[in-house]
Image 1 (cartoon, rainbow, N blue to C red):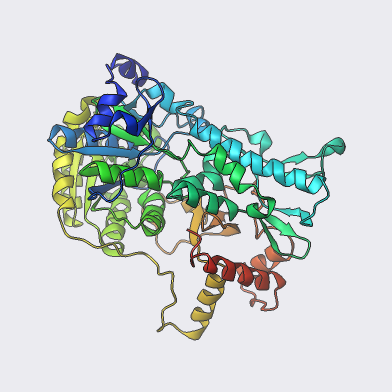
Image 2 (tube, rainbow, N blue to C red):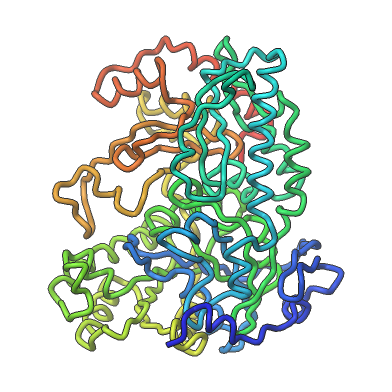
Amino acid sequence: MLSDIEIAHKCKMKDIGEIAAELGLKEKDIERYGRYKAKITTLPHGKKRGKLVLVTAINPTASGEGKTTVSIGLADGMRKNGKKVCLALREPSLGPVFGIKGGAAGGGYAQVVPMEDINLHFTGDLHAITAANNLLAAMLDNHIFRGNALDIDPEKIYFRRCLDMNDRALRNVTVGRKGEGVEREEHFEITAASEVMAILCLATSLKDLKRRLGNIIVGENRKGEYVFARDLKAEGSMCALLKDAIKPNLVQTLEGTPAIVHGGPFANIAHGCNSVMATYAALSLADYVVTEAGFGADLGAEKFLDTKCRVAGIQPDCVVVVATVKALKLHGGADKANLSGEDLGALEKGLPNLFKHIENIKNVYGKPVVVAMNRFASDTPAEIELVMKSVEAAGAKAVFTDVFLQGGEGGRELADAVVSAAEEKSGLTYAYDLRPDRKEDQRHREARVRRQRRGIFRHRRAKDRRSGSARIRPPSRHHRQNAVFPVRRRETSCAAGRVHRARARHHRQGRRGVHRGGRGQHHADARARGAPRRRTHRRGRKRRDLGAELTAEGRCVY
């Protein structure tokens, strides 16, 4: 079989003007980046929205389950079935592209093109985000060096520089040496994990983007008060660097299906979804929109449903959970080196992992589920039959699809099942409520009020694909119950409205955060050991002031 890049090179792409016309966009509505890429400059407003399909997966394995590939094949299958459909995907980051995972433009005959451009520099969005992020970092250090009028404490700087590349040597560095500024510890992170990336993907307009950028907490002054990017008057310059990056990108699949590829926050640290503006545009331009959320349904889909849907005021009409027989056998304890052979025992043990995701989507969020089994040549008839019957007994429908080898033709059956499920009436219910319940006891109510006074945040868990087994010996891959998840630190991303809870085991180097170091870390460690919470904490009073300020701007930072 041809490689992905060979398949992409053989594709005869349509002019991007034709793709735009298929969505009802005119030449004046796009800004071309060559013949096959464009920015959508005029976003439709007030039009009837199409149906939204969210593609997620079971807990991912090392090689991935093929969410992007299935998403692309599903959209192509819908188009072959006569539906007006548009893809809404994330942009790849250069770190994974040049790392183990590789590109993020799909695979086989289900790809978005031009594949090399999308995987590399594309339209320069990630470079613009990197520049805006590092501009704020430079202005912060320059302010301290030039007299420090805001009395910023160099030991309590929380904002980090970024680079869209895997470079472990830059995780912990020292800047300002030899008189070139104030010497202090600094940390780099990858651009896709930066707060600026999350802000861009949550912004609904250029004005909203500027407001959010101004709400970034860069550190504290010596009085223990937060210092914001707006205090440095950095938000205007940052917004100028992002004026083009905020516009959604339009490309196409191998079969000519329109695809809006915009924004790329990581799901294990940020919220793992494409931009709100891209989703709005796709929903206004097509009858069906296929989008994806990173990692498994317990992480990426949870963030999509509890975070993005709240922010954007949208909800999916159907959720597709992608799985493979190989992955289910691996979750069932099969040897990674022997996944191609038939193993019904391991498959049966691994199926509860899939069942739990189905249960969460149906019972917690109230959404219909279709299971997309990404077919491999090694899948035996007995294994396929076992999966089909088991999924049906779990209250969902499983469809084996082969979009990798057949493209849209291999996704037509899945497309029919998804369209049918999307017609079911359903209402989105969230996994947690942001407002306190009047019926809850006084102790829990006070805890919620304390959180809300600091601003209303979604709690985002930072993890990798294996860290769900941190406290289980030996590590268990199948569905786990009553597992303990150790939290080493929390980080508040004020402008993005989220609180990271970083996992202890796989984050050894630790990014410096609001709650790391000093008395805050001491009290966090004490609470983790079961010690009573101290109520006389000076920073708590400052956070309550911050919460009042954020509430005055519209209650929620989002």
